[in-house]
Amino acid sequence: MPVSSDLSFEQVVRENQAMVFRTLYRLTGSREHIEDLAQEVFLRLYKALPNFRGESLVTTYIYRIAVNVAQNEWKRRKRSDRPLVSISEETSAWEDRLEHPERNAEQQMEEREFRLKVEEQLQELSAVERSILVLYHQEERSYEQIATALNMPIGTIRTHLHRGRKKLRERLQASEGRALCPMSR
Amino acid sequence: MSDESINLSVDDAVLEMERVLDERIVREIERQPDLATSIPADFAARVAAQIPSKRPVAVVETTHYGRTAMWASLAALLVAFVVAAVRGAGHSPIGAAIEMTLYMQFLAIAVWLGVRRWRAS
Image (cartoon, rainbow over all chains, first blue to last red; front, side, top):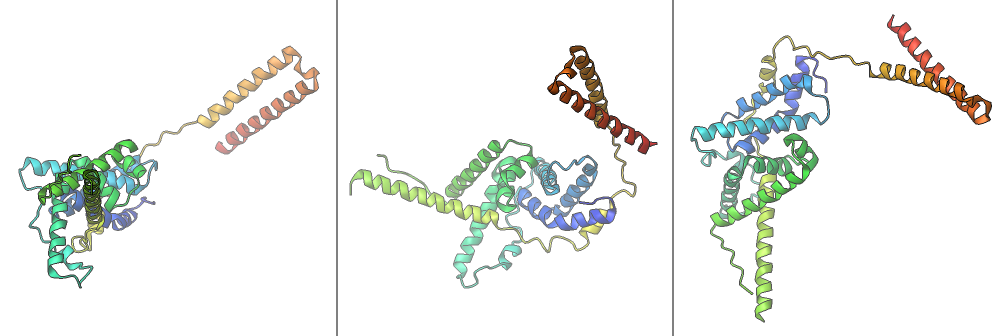
């Protein structure tokens, strides 16, 4: 990846901006300040490039920076006591992409509500669990890439991934009032 | 239906529910948000415009590991020659072959170092 000129770096930004925006969106749970956060990611990347020795892909490096920026934003919002998830935020992006227009309105409403709950519960997970879930499922990174991005052993990544999914399932079940009461033997 | 088979059916149903819910959750996380409208058209240009005009120069320290290794090899070969001469290794066919190999290696390294020096000058 040539970054010997400003024009080349602009190209790097253009090629990776969508990935950075959607990762930040999922990690922070809202579109608030997302443009500023994305700018910060790329400026940090530019400053770090002289030290980049090519041990991993540049995208893995970008993910690492994006996760750090998202975590800082998360901490800032917690300190300012602001709601961590903008549930009432417009979801036109979701609504506009109706994959199955033939489904009735009730089904679509139910799916939308489920989607919002997943988003809400995703933000309730720890920063590490949320990052790993997003990088693995949304960004389709491998365990090795996630381990490099987060500087963690692969076994730890697997554990957090499993725990994160389990917590999400349990909390969604609890929020929907589904009690699992296996009969005693 | 016995109690045990009823319990197994309930457990299976619970596991199936959990599996279905897991799949649904994963599908939602895998769904990539559509943020096309959130990314300004000139975002990349604006970021590039914030880059300082003078890029910080990365100081790269030159190492000479290869050259050092070659000099060390030369020294080791000289020691090997001395040892071979003292022990009279050249008197046997195998010893003569080993000596010849050491000479060729010494010659090759010496030529390599010489060429490098000539190019550097």
